[in-house]
Image 1: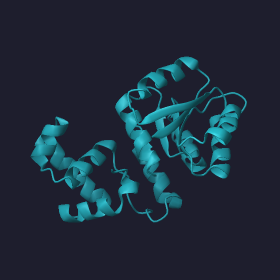
Image 2: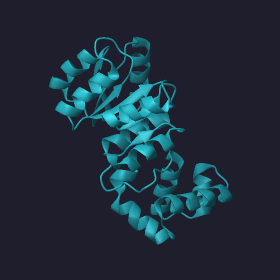
Image 3: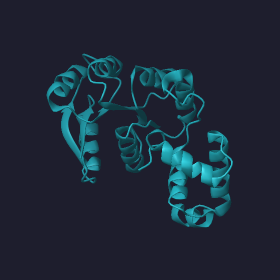
Length: 215
């Protein structure tokens, strides 16, 4: 069971998230907060596994709240939910300790993936933010992974299916893609990870499950 805390100053958004998260029986929303001070108070007793945190909140904003959590409760994972997508904001939140950054209009599939990934210790960002995350990871912020390029969510899906033993054609059928598209993704994965064959990719993936966010 993954225990969740939702922090946002708009109850409409909180209620919508609760309905979406209720679909997953292994998710449990244990608390909600409308500002950063409430988050800190709740964390002391509730100890959530993952916090879904807005940036623009009263009393303590998301950045201030995140700094306190990283200092006092480093085991708690934080995913930022925001519409602020400029590079500086994203980098600031990652540097402050966030494990994920999602746009508020993200779909349920990516929300679920983000929670699963960060709970396991990996990073996850919305599509379009991968380059920013890669810059962060390559700037000595992820020990031991300095030179590794971050994979997109689609590439991570394909890596997972490759590890399971699926061929390009089988992956194409499962993801409703063309075989050529899957082949292109596979080549990009090899390039980003500096690998040159499937056997090495499978070995790397199995040795770096947490980094890649694989089950």
